[in-house]
Image (tube, rainbow, N blue to C red; front, top):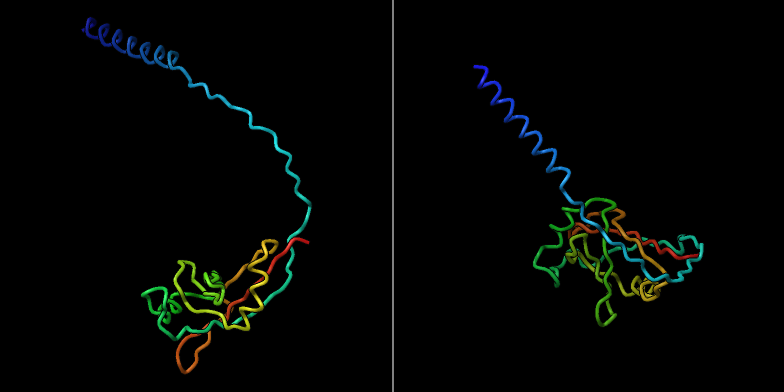
Length: 154
């Protein structure tokens, strides 16, 4: 019986010794950090402030979407107030499409609204935040009004 105890103890001792030595032998990989070239970046301490705010009605919400196979009315029912929307200028710059967060076409802006927003979209000094302001129901179905906030550095 003592021989079995000594054998098991010796085995456990060797096993523990093996793990201790193995831990010490592990070599940590050396990570070399290369220094990046210094660049002089000057950032003016300008604050972003609201330049202009608009509430615009989205047109075409009752029509079949031209840029997606999904029904615009169904897309509107999946949305809620203050969901983000995206304004996308058409290639010909004659239309501003209104897209939902998944980039599905939910309508477009009128020519008057396009003319209000276009200078801010084309000028890189401004950033634009947009979202759903509220929904309303007309005889043709759901429609929506979006808010457009133009931010600029002042």
